[in-house]
Image 1 (cartoon, rainbow, N blue to C red):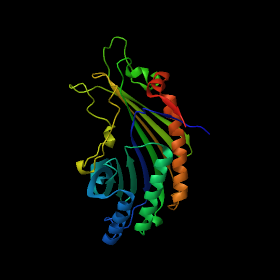
Image 2 (image 1 turned 180 degrees about the vertical axis):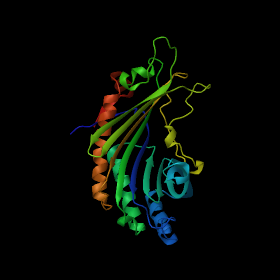
Image 3 (image 1 turned 60 degrees about the vertical axis):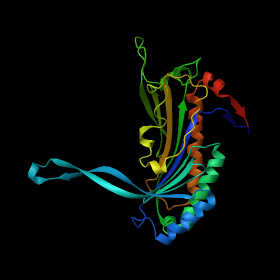
Image 4 (image 1 turned 135 degrees about the vertical axis):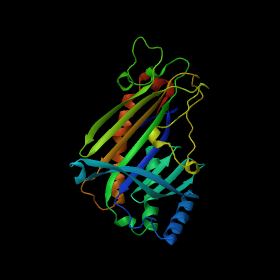
Length: 292
């Protein structure tokens, strides 16, 4: 069966996230296990180990009887150990925290290659960390981010279906903003699509390539991005298209690599279909469709 792809795809970032119940130790594992994990990651091409932390903010509701039964909202700060392995010219990384494993790539070629890479990561992580194979799965997500840079002949609205763009009043000379849709795609499964129209900086070029929530807080762990700047018409509004497809597991099944990868397949299938529906004929022609 033939598959189609874009010769000049605007894709800049792909992320798979596997969320699970907490590992027993805040330090993730023993130092020997972490050394074994690093060695295995080096064999796969992820030689750079970065020990970092992430600060997660949450809120706790506390009912205080002295305040006539009103709830008091107390902010909670949680510092989590974050272990990152990076390689491939700083275009791929694997991030491990107490309750999730995240695979990030900016040199994506096709889903089959990405899945093979993810498979190797899951196998290495489970083999190196004894407790990982005993956790319960809570959520799996797959996210694609495209940066759409208009050429001289077209504007952003020519590349994306109109329903996905922010409202553009007839009297406006320029606009910026974002639209979001949340679609139920199956049982406990949703897709969040966000289309952001962004203005370039005073230099005429984009100042940001990723959605705000994907910005890397630790500069040591950042990845190289390579948007298609060759045909971009300097000064035009550009687009950041994010498709985040996720499935929750309320029954929290035991960690199972084969099952998790099958779920990743299903997430990819609808994400790919959504992308092709979101772009216009102009986009397909300019980015050049190739049959494989």
